[in-house]
Length: 86
Image 1: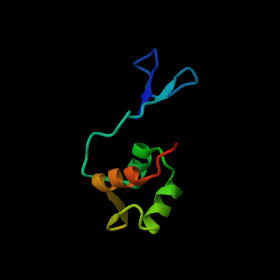
Image 2: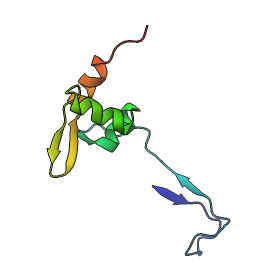
Image 3: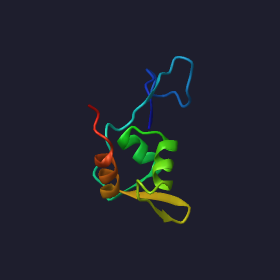
Image 4: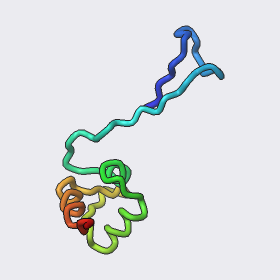
């Protein structure tokens, strides 16, 4: 979500003096399923890493039309199965 922090509330459009701040949620509220973009945000892993894990069978995913969905429980199991760094 973009927030326009302008000193003039009457201004209808952005100007050079406007500051736009990209506000991202710190976490996504507990849900039963996530899109790949949401999995990326939750896990900190990149898109390619997510899709490689799906294709290798390490991360279970489902399809809803063209959309790839990962259940929260499958994401949790995938992350817990990653090797522990020593």
